[in-house]
Image (cartoon, rainbow, N blue to C red):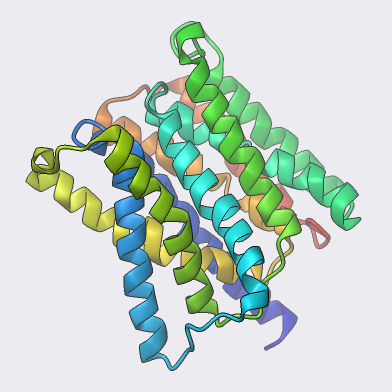
Length: 295
């Protein structure tokens, strides 16, 4: 496969990931009305892990992992699954779906900054300019009396930033493991989601009968798309693109999240939100046009 083809496939995978994860933010906000956050997210993730494992076996991929890799696999599961999904889901107990998505997706800031000292990959000027535009869009969406962060929302802010920082760290420092691609995703989902389910059962104590028909449909979507398909496409993108570029491109996710939350949950969508999303799109476009994005 040529470098150009690999880049094109990687960008397509990022588009699928960004849209699927973006639509999941209002879906999670709705689901929190019926099931507690970690139990809901852990259950859908474990179901997705089982489905991906079946697909891997059907494709002839081995699920076995050597003993020497279990430590790295557990670290990847913590950073990519438990911290990213768990903390992000917890954040919207205090924040709106749009606020949570935008705060969590400050992740490219940390990934771009960490990639420089950790990997020695100095970002191109166009990437930095694009990042500034994206951050300006996020700052605009958080600004103003009607949508600014209140003091009682601090736990949500901390969980959102924690998710962003830890996922950025995983994006930069973790290298693809010598495991079959689908098997690697399945194991990370399983190892990252099992602690969520255990915590949910022991501490959150969910009412299994509280899940409505609409809530069940949301769970099915969360299992098949954000937890299943999007994690496969995310790791596929990371195998083909520099981590900083992949991280910046995922800033399309909060744009999708804000739009979806506005239409499905009635969250704010006015001139300010549209201008902020325009800045985000411009920033992503500028970063993607740079031939040295993240390099």
